[in-house]
Amino acid sequence: MTPHEKADPMSDRDAAHDPTPGSDPASLQAAPDGPSDVSAFANRLRKNLAHWRKWARRRGITCFRIYGRDVPQFPFAIDWFETASPRAEIHLHVQEIDTGWRRSDADYTAWLVAVCDAICEVCGVRAEQLHLKRRERQRGTSQYEKLDGEEAEVFVVEEAGLRFEVNFDAYLDTGLFLDHRPMRAMVAETLAARAKQGAGTRFLNLFAYTGSFTVHAARAGSEGSTTVDLSNTYQAWTARNLALNGIDSGRHLLVAADALAWLESAVAARERFDVIVLDPPSFSNSKKMQGVLDVQRDHVRMVGQCHSLLADGGELFFSTNLRSFRIDAPLVDECSLREITHQSVPEDFRRPSGAGPHRAWKALRRG
Ligand SMILES: C[S@@+](CC[C@H](N)C(=O)[O-])C[C@H]1O[C@@H](n2cnc3c(N)ncnc32)[C@H](O)[C@@H]1O
Image (cartoon, rainbow, N blue to C red; front, top):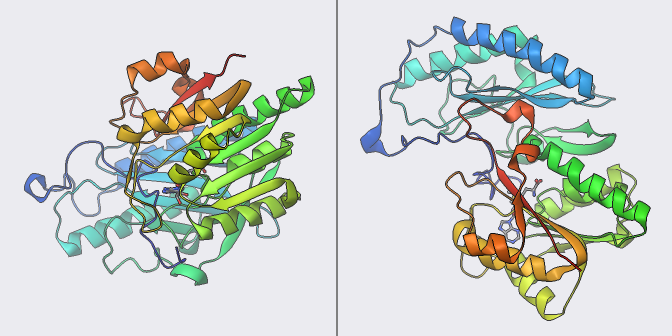
C-alpha cells in the first residue's frame, strides 16, 4: 500500500461508524440540527475534557478519547494526543461518524466548520492541531483537512514509557489504536511475568498494523517475536517503532504476508509460540491475498490454528471490532476462551450505550 491510499484496510477499526442503519440512501434522514448551533456540543466537550484530562494525568496517560458521540446530534469521535519532545504539542484526531444524514452542502460545511471552531476553542488548539477525518470528501473545511500522503507530518507519542510514531493526516487511522491500550498492557504484563518465572516468551503478532503490541512485548522481555501484516507500509512503520525504542530487530522477525496463508504453513511446520495476539480486520480483500477474510466466517479456523500454535501453558489474545460479531459456541469450549472485553476496553472508550470499540477473548493452552 502506498501512503496515498486512504482506503485503509482497517477502516472498520474504530468508532467512526454508526451502528444504526443510515448509509443506505433509502434510509437517509434529515439532519436533526440547525447548521451552526453548537453550544450543547461545546458545553459537553468542555465537561468531558476536564474529566478525561484529570483521569489521564492520574494514570500517566497522554493519548486518550475525550468525546465519543456523547451528544448524538454531534456524531464525532475525538482523540487527544500529546506529542513528545522535541515537538511537544496537543493534537486532536477528529473522526466524523457516518450517519447518512441528509444536509445541503452549504449547511453541512457551515455546521462542520462551526463544530471544528468549537473544538479548537474548548481545547485551546489552533486549526493546524486539529486533524479532521470526514467520511465523505467535500470541499470547504480545508483549514482542518491537511496534506495528503507523504507530505503529512510524522509525530512521536508515548505510552507506558514507550515511543510510537503517529501520522494524523495520511490515513484514516493514526498508527496507534487507543482502545487497545489496556490489551497492550496485559500482553506486556503476561510476558514480563513469564520472563520472571523463566517460562517461554516467544511472541506472535498477527494482523499487526504498526507493531505496537510487538514493541510492548519486546520491551517486556520477549526473547523473540514474529510480526505478520500484509502491508509493506505498516511493516516499515513497525521497524521504525522498534528502532524508536532501541529494540534489536535481529530477534524480532517482520513478515509481510497474508496471515491466513502464513498460519497454514506455521501449523504445518508445527511452530510454537508462548503468547499470541490475533486482531484481524472485520473484512479484508486485498489483491495480495487469496480470497477474502471475513472475521465472522473465518474466526473459528484462525482461533483454532492459533490455539494449536501455542506451547503448553501459552496464552492467546483474540480481538475483533465487528459490532455484530458472534463467537462460535463450540470454539469457546474447545479453546477454553474467556471473554475479557470488560478489562480490555478502556474507561475513556466506554459509553452508556454499551457499544464498545472491540470485543476480546483470552485462551490458555493447558499443558
Ligand atoms: C485491525 S488492524 C490491526 C490492529 C493492530 N492489531 C493494533 O492493535 O495495532 C488490521 C491489520 O490487518 C492487516 N491485514 C489485512 N488483511 C490482512 C491479511 N490477509 N494478512 C495480514 N494482514 C492483513 C492490515 O494491513 C492492518 O494492518
